[in-house]
Image (tube, rainbow, N blue to C red; front, side, top):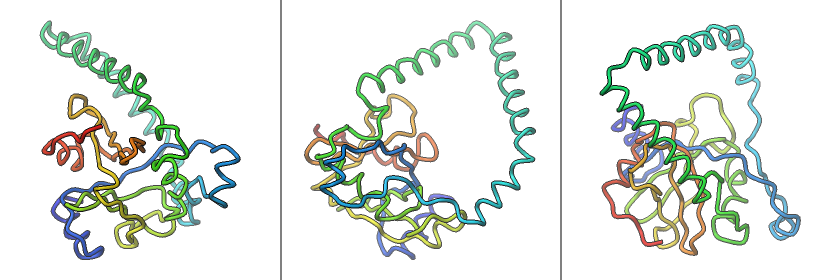
Length: 226
């Protein structure tokens, strides 16, 4: 879906004017302490199972797995050959890229951004995470940035196809309560975007592509105060 057609779908179906939006996923939600679960009651911590149609699709896809694995292997071999035949300047660029990747991974680990949230179940992000799949059992959320709020949309139940057709608004976060943040301000190319709440807690979502519409939108805006 192109950016223009995506925004038209958003306007028509959800009735909001979004400045940017992307489909996002979250990592596996860790098991909360027993006292946290007792305080919130029943809380769904996993997405819904695939419907029969999706299971059939997965079975049909099995015969194609060996060719795909072979293509991946060939791609890796091709990349290795290209590196071995690269010119001095090209090898220098590759080394610089590898160094950037190592710095990115080290920074992610140092800041604890390899976790799905900041770890405080009593913070706003932790409490929001506990309700994530109660809002919708679909494994993705369309995260939308508007002038006044962050809107999350998804099909109420998990679907295999037609997510835009079935999506509804499942959560709204006023900008006074939460903001979207690229934690690296564009320094590294990642799929990571943070939902940062007013109390300093945060929740990490992953866009489908790096340098997504959300990332480009955030690059045009100043980084909020921590």
